[in-house]
Image 1 (cartoon, rainbow over the protein chains, first blue to last red):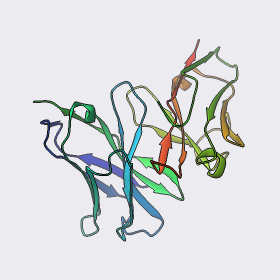
Image 2 (cartoon, each protein chain N blue to C red):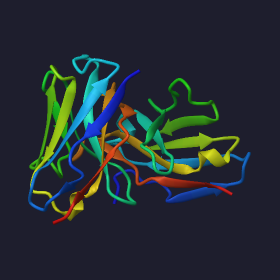
Image 3 (cartoon, each protein chain N blue to C red):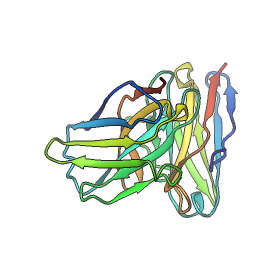
Image 4 (tube, rainbow over the protein chains, first blue to last red):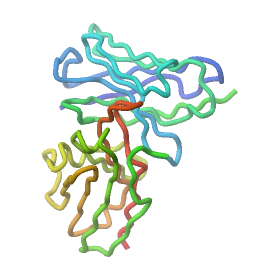
Length: 118
Length: 110
């Protein structure tokens, strides 16, 4: 059974870069069927899709974040990562990693709260 | 302001039925499958319905989905107190953000 686990700092300073990693277990990140994605949810608000990537390198990003977001994949570690640059308080959210298959967000990680504050 | 419009809240008594609507446009719901997600308090969202009306294994048939034109609907019958959660619709969009969510609907089982 596919499981995903986020890891990374819970506190990031304004203007710095947020970096998170998602470790995939119970399946291969190199599966051609899957895209691997990041979704965030600000406190008290609904989810917002951030971006996703295929192991081949094909990626899609939320256009409102595209200039600041990079999603990458490391097949040797069965992990994928998120980098969000120049963060502000508006980037404070629970960040989820997720697997997508045939256009469906099928499995979600438990989420990790990232707070942007000095 | 979400691209997909959901009612902020719905409520019903235990054992009753409730429906949650999700309204979009031709750039999203009108030309793509819709999925629904349940988020219980303090937990990650979970897939409830996909491809408009299909349920993943383990999801009871009390939950159902449908789509017509640029709108979709989630139905829940035989309401239980454990169904109290936030429900989100989601789909692909051909405009700014490839994947969009509804604003969410809070279900209260009175």
